[in-house]
Structure formats: C-alpha cells, structure tokens
Length: 119
Image (tube, rainbow, N blue to C red; front, side, top):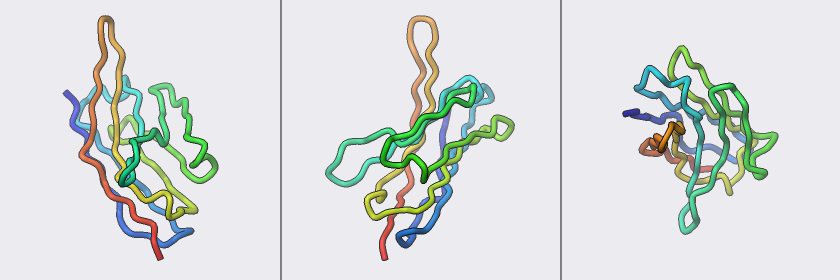
C-alpha cells in the first residue's frame, strides 16, 4: 500500500511559477514510476508528466519546456516544477504511483491539489 500526499497548489498569476510535491509513504518508492495528472472542470483527466524509477521522463506536449518533473528517492518524493503558467493550466493536479509486477500491477493516487492560474 502506498499513500500519496500532494502539496504546493494554489493561486498564481499567468506567467508565474509553482512547485508541487507528492510525498509517498512506501519505502519501496524507487520501484514505482511516478506521474502527475490533471483534470480541469468538464474535461477528462490527462497525463502531465511521468518519471520512471530510472529517471526517464516524458511530458504532455502542452507543458514541454515549461514543466519539469523530478524525484528524490531518499525523501520518497516527486516534484513538478511549473513555470510560465497559463490559465489553461488550471486544474486539479493528482500524483500517481505505478508499478507493474508479475500477474498485475500496483496503482495508487493522491487526493489532488488545486492549481488556479488567473489574474
């Protein structure tokens, strides 16, 4: 079982920055691929960024060059640095931990944190 707790959301003006954090309870954190998803009102949840245990990253086209995902395995924490924020980045951002194992997978979600980009 992995519990994920996000923090760092809030209200920011367009062009501003925020850093989200997601702390995991499980000591085997390094075995999990970690990701940030977001869901805006009336829209489907979408993948924002992902980082594997081997530190391979990928991003949604809409955030490339503006957002950076990173992880600190010693602190069981994944981060999302968001720069040059736009109003269309407004959404609830959720942290996900995923690990494939023989015969199945483990998939955990945090409760989400609100990011609002508005002047």
